[in-house]
Amino acid sequence: MIEWFFILPWGLWLVEAVASLVNAARYAGLARDEGRVWGAGLVPENQQPAAVLVAIKGFDPANTPRFFESLRHQRYRRYRLIFAVECETDPIVPWLRQALGLGAGETVWRPAEVPGEGLQEIRLVVAGHAEGRGQKVHNLIAAFDLLTPEDAVVAFADADIHCRADWLAWLLAPINAGTNPVSTTYRYLVPRRATLVNHLASVINASVATLGGPSRWSSLWGGSMAIARTDFDALDVPRLFAGSLNDDLRLGRAARRSGRRVAFVRSLLMPSPVDFSWAGFFEFGRRQYYQVRHFAPIFYKVSHLLTWVYLVGFVSAVTLAVTQGSVAALAVLGVVAVCDQVRALCRWRIVSELFEPEVIGALRPSRWVEHLLTPVWMAIHAGLTTSALFTDRIRWAGIGYRVHAEDRTEVLGRS
View 1 (cartoon, rainbow, N blue to C red):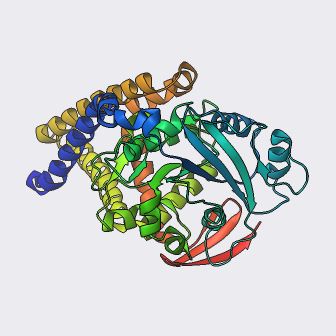
View 2: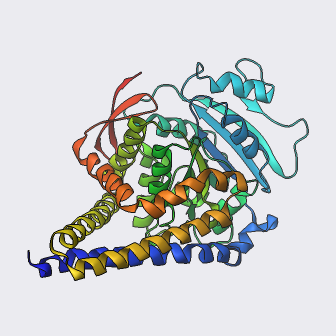
């Protein structure tokens, strides 16, 4: 076998390994610098009134109460919460009403004395069943109708995240500082149980979570994103979402095309507890990349390329090293292995600096999965990206969907 034939794939593999290492190595330092870059947006006097929209379904006794209480006690000057649900029979509806002391049919909670700062009110809106678009998007569009002229910033949150008390202040800091009209961060999957599939899911997700970088190409994540109201209106977000399955990729693409730069808040990575079965994990991964394929095709192609470059480079190098004793193959394997190990140390530094001890403890076994099993989880990652090419439908929160175009979604059925 002619070794020069492998110069291109090995070269790409080496470049990818070094770039991944450099990106992880810079992450913690850039996260620490954010206070200097967006510090003005953290000053209460500069914090604009915000509406936080939560499209929510179901009740998770291990996470929902914690999420709800964290949203109610954000250290932010003035904000409102709007919870949007599909139907009155959703278990979250009676729980919310009981938690807020609301009677049957009541949809608005306000404190006994309207505070000058902090949480001003909580509203509940029932959106009904979605037709021709995703249920989450349908719920959000219903919440848009409750926005008021006073809401200078529109923020979005998913109910499976763990919010710090300063979550809203940091998420909106780039907007309130006037540097970016749109901001976001990303989830960091935290295993609820120490199973192999949960740790593999966490490591694969971490490889995406720590990519956030230059604002000119950053995407949005719907679990924590925000947009200035003037830009929300200029982009006509309700019209943008009409007919769409997806919210975040759709909005992120429109923002970038219009020249709006997205701020990625590195210091705000959001712990998100998960407990996957193998089937559930592969369904989750396929669903993510199915949406990326349709709503951010360039990102999908890059993800597909990078995962397969690693896999092809590794397999070809191992094959030549074992069958021919190739010194070049052994050298490439050694360099990439060193990069992988140092990158894993850098990612653990990110975890150690950004998360609470409880989260760090849950993630500790994932550290060794990244150190010892990089070819394995990269192969699984490559399989997930490829699987999105061979499906024309997904199931999300009990509802089947088929995407025909960015603004045309077919609802296939409900379980």
